[in-house]
Image (cartoon, rainbow, N blue to C red; front, side):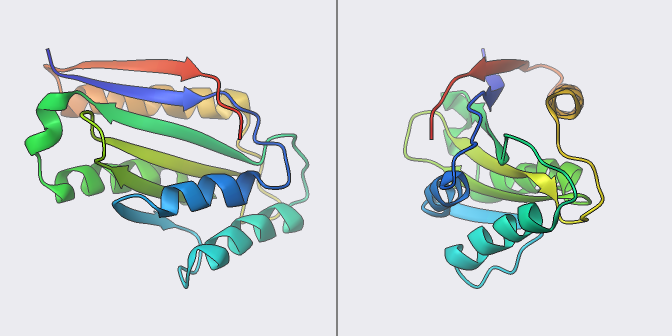
Length: 163
């Protein structure tokens, strides 16, 4: 049976190199996109994410959220624009308040899209992307995916990753 899994990586991403590590990792994917930064090169993307944190009126131990949308192998035949359009729709959920960067990975049997969402808004007085807010958004994304793919098993998963 076809399936789609939205996997939230539970790492805290609280170290000084979290932005550079995750964003650089995503930048090496097959195709990338996102919102809220000037895409001169990956260093400018990292700088823009860091600037949001520096300008924020809030503090958090979390710098960013990393999650992955994974598709079962039957999706390998889908064209790139199928994945990138879906990634863009998910990124659009965040982009009014938070920077988001994503990359399509087709190097495995399961095509998947990595997302990095800044926990700090680029509006200095806007609230952080907290655990509770991310939980609500995750369930919203899940329900939208279920609506788009009514006959597909869509599920949410959590995992630990240290970066």
